[in-house]
Image (cartoon, rainbow, N blue to C red):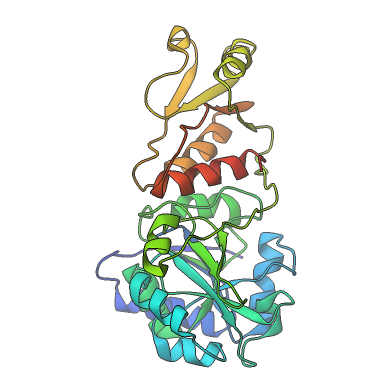
Length: 324
């Protein structure tokens, strides 16, 4: 299969490209598309065969549910059995945006989408291309457009690196804005629970809900990056010891402003990661380190008491390094 890469205008998506991509989805093909968080790998949510292809292409386990992307509340009503007042409050506050909500699933949703559960995750992306595509094609089941375990794609180039020749097309609207996956809140249980920290910071959710929320402790999920080892040190002394033991040209340091090892500035490749602003730096840094043939990507100790966006990004760094 040859993957077509269409350049598309982010703010004013070309109608003919949207129609072609929607037609592919309706024929059961897979299409990658941009959202404000990361690029998604889309299939027609009502086609079990097409959705199954997502699992096959990504190497994703079948017990892992897929998020469904919607463009309006009519689509939501067909996908769930009930929308609680709390769900409506969060939709009104954060949609379109990087928040996914887990709600009781309608019988219309194919079981392959649900991963063995009776609930479905829904999100309304805040991206003109994504919304135009969903409006034309209908709801789209879409996890991130990468091989399972790999860093999420924040550009069409990242998608091509992982999935070229495996999917029908990519809508290339340039780099994503947020550069981190959506926050996921499970509202299908008695008490709301955050399943994943992401584009909507925990504090913003708590401000709307008027209560504190506990984040679900996710299992370790170190990335599959070939020969590249991703490491996080919480102690500066251990960090300096690790850096000193790295042969020249084999490792890179990721820090957050002030270089923690000033004596190694000239001898050690380093990346600066801004923990206070949104952007695609984290996943881009990991992928660049891999393409540079580095053996180790070493993260400096994370600042204490991070809040907002920084807290979400720190959680993703710990997961990338396989740290609980």
